[in-house]
Image (cartoon, rainbow, N blue to C red; front, side, top):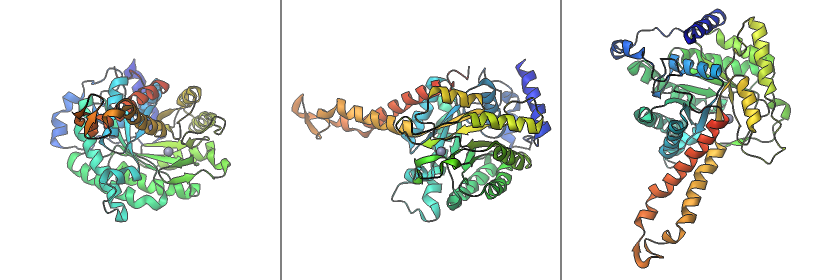
Length: 402
Ligand SMILES: [Zn+2]
């Protein structure tokens, strides 16, 4: 039954968009394990999806499966191995996939704030180094991991280009890209220019089996140094015609894989209730519009992603998922959780953290085991992972592997 559904979807996809060509020759290692790849690693997912980093057809299968089963994957901004590992720990706990996401600033932080960042060199090196960390350890957590990057505006394209060079180099050696996907956010530009630049990059990415996330409309609020708090509120709401235009344009490229961050009143950050007017019906209207244009049975032809979801009601989140949202970005809430874990650790052990020697048990007692950085950082990791399990519950992403 599942196979029949999959076959039907494949036929639909082939009819309305250029069929992905994933049969390209791979390395000898890939060839020899072909029979092995037929075996399913996860009962509820297509056989292509294995523990560890997923790219290309496996990524597409994973996202299509999420859309079909009605859940969204947490896409989490990370700033180092602690937050990266907390993501994978959470995914192992909730039994679902995770999208580890690096921002340009996050990449620079990973390289180290003192590193030379001329031409975004540190931002690029930090993202690449962290991606390699994920590639080394991801399979140890037994979950599918998507390696992704966040908002990239026009002025930041040198960062994007640097990442693409790393992907192309990795692809030449391993038959798959280093990252699974990248986001381009050219929503400040006019629509035609936005999509024209996306199309140029989509061509380059499609050649190495990469997925592009693009943005239409503007996500309000402030995040990672981009301040959209004063933007005209009309630009916070995408029109179905714009989604359709983008879908058509990008579908012209062979092997194109893309997701759309359409704005529907989303705002980065957490604000007092009443300040955000979320309209996920925009996503439903867009799907209906595209479905009619394509004359397809598929009620959700576009894969959407949800930015600025922190502080949203579970009702709004679920309603957005019904409209084909397959990933929700999480940053603000996990930033707080991480800090709150460290804060709680300090509060609990305050009297053991005031000097190297001396605590309530005696003036000469050493405190080494309390101030070992791993203790406070681990509390941050645990709190972040717990918060992500809660996020996965909101996103219907619990026990979706087996
Ligand atoms: Zn965002």
